Image (cartoon, rainbow, N blue to C red; front, side, top):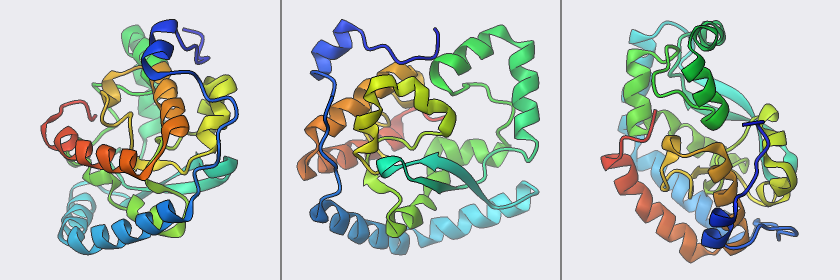
Amino acid sequence: MDGTAKINSADREALFALVTTPRPIGLTSKRIADIILALCGIVLLFPFFVICFVATAFFSPGPVLFRHRRVGFNGKRFDCLKFRTMAIDAPERLQRHLEADPAAAAEWIATRKLRNDSRVTTVGALLRRSSLDELPQLFNVLKGDMSIVGPRPITEEELSRYSDAIGAYYSCRPGITGLWQVSGRSTTTFNRRVVLDNFYASHWSLSLDAKIIMATIPAVCFSDTAY
């Protein structure tokens, strides 16, 4: 795989045509819903914030929060927040792992994920499996950098993989959850992720967001696709 997103005919037929001139998904109704849901989430999930903060601080030396530069709505760069799930020397561990394991290197190229990731701490693995590591992104939603539902925020180096489909990604605020998260998540390919982002951009509605939110609950509770 050359790292450039190529949409095959089966995906295109299943999820309709690619978006060539997507309309911006920045409607007032969606933003109001985001603020309400984010505030409710922070209040209701506050005990989990405390547990995650204490567990990360106690069992994994280093900063509790991880800030990673991502590309968002209309190409705006922002710091995406998470509870830290990796060791502080994660980049060096990744390089050594990929150099020593060709199969892992191929998996990384295809999905930008590793099922057996030596960078992830013991506490971090639990947080990832439960998706609790993403709770701080509720504050990204309040700030306006993210939405509750949307494409997963991408990094600078992943921009080229969207090729002509980048316009669809730019038309949305990145989401805490989305079609990718409820459609296989880490077990799907990056190319499939691009297809799903295109589908979401061209078929967005509040009812679609509601369906994705409802589908997220069983995806988080009963799926083993988060790692």
